[in-house]
Structure formats: C-alpha cells, structure tokens
Image (cartoon, rainbow, N blue to C red; front, top):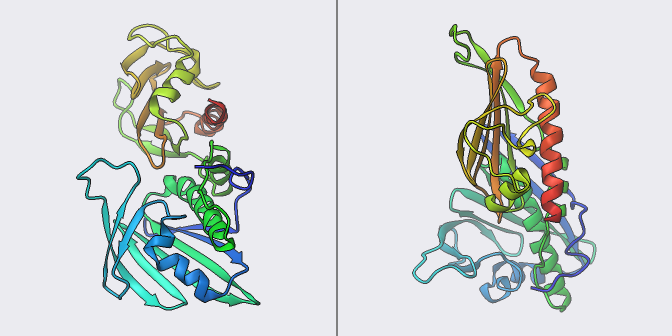
Length: 300
C-alpha cells in the first residue's frame, strides 16, 4: 500500500476511550466535506469498502442481516469472522457486531459536509491503541476515496500507535496483593504491566537480549532489568516467549510475550515481592524501562 505523509502523522484524531463493566468504547470523529448520502454509500457498499476498510466485507444491509469479514492474505478456506447488522438507518446510522466487538458508524449533516462518528466497543482494553491507530489510517483512506484520490490505508511504523498509548494512559501499571511469596508463607505484592507492542515477539526478544541469549542459572541480560530490579539468575526461559529471573529478597520478574492485536506481541510484565516492598518505585522504574523498549521497537 502507498504511504502518504498524512498516513504517517503521529497526532491522534479527535478520540476518547472509556471503560465500564469490563468493556471499552473508543470514540473517534472526522469531518468530511461530502454530503451524508455520499458518505453512507462509502460505509455500506462492499465495493467501496474494499478501498478503505481493513477486511473484505459481505453484508445483508437489513437489521439482523448477516455479515462476514475476511482479512487480505488469509489462507484459502479461512472462514474469517462473522457479524450481524444491529442498526441500519440510511443515511444516518450503520452498526454491527464483528465477532465479540460492536461498531457503530453515525453520519450527521455538518454544514455542506458530514460529521462521521465511530464508536468501537470491545473487551481488550490494552488493544485500544492498535484499534485507534488502525481506524485513523482507515478513515484517512475513506476521506481520500471520497475525494476521488487513491485510497490506500498506508502503514504505521509504530509512532501513531505509541501516541495513542500515551493519550489513553495505556502505559500505566498496577500494584495488587498476591499470595505467599517468601519462605515463611507471608503475603506479597505484585506489579503488573500489560502493553501492546508494535513488533513481533522475535524482534522484541532480540532488542531485549541484545545478542546475549538468556541461560537458566546465569545472570539475566541487562535489557530485561529495571533500576529497581537488577540482574539476578534466570530461573526459567522459553525464547522468544517468556523469561523469569530472581531478584533478592524473595522477588521475581517475569516477561511474557503472547499474541496481540495488530502485528505485534502483547507484553505482560510482572514483578512480585514482599508485602512491604516499594511498589511505587517499581512501577516508575518498569514504566521507564518499557517506554525505552517501545521507543526502540518503533525504530527496529
């Protein structure tokens, strides 16, 4: 796909993220210099959708009508994902499920043009930056399609994604009580970060290890450490997916790189320690370390 300077703009669009009852709602707005009827056609015509939507769509444009979504490059026989039209009010509202997610597109008159509003509701809050950056590129392609220019959704190398991480506060960790952590069976505390990254696990692992492969029983490579968690012996390693190392006294750090949204790995980092452990300092140190990693991955 062609990439334009607009595609690579790292400034988020008008957008908000709210979370309630385990579900998150991403709201994005875009003003378009085209009448609602023209915007509606681009939202609902499968031929037009191919120019800007992230998946190939088939739709029965009636309330309760079935939908299907298939990503480009999917293997033959891959059924893709299904959905259902939940609302259709031409030319104002088109809403549907996509797997477990729900998308609502609203078109309202705005002077001689239209205001397009997307509300995407989903359960995976740490994936919100991937959704937001992806929709920003897609809606940018929609705008170019309506203008009669080549659409092409372009590609984010990671800067746009990371700007949404900061905007939505997805760079923050949590601290919580956990079960026994010491030899005396005393209660402990755990610091936890979950962060969507912009590169696959193999690339993340290479950046963290810097060419020094972790070995059980030996000190962990420096890239896996933080200011409050100096290098200790590796206790378990499964490259490039997980690593645990010991930190004294009675503390342990675990890095896990699982499947994520978009094209990157999902990082879950935890450190456990005794109940009187300074978790505020640990949260600050790991937040700094993960930001350093994220910045390095944008350039990787």
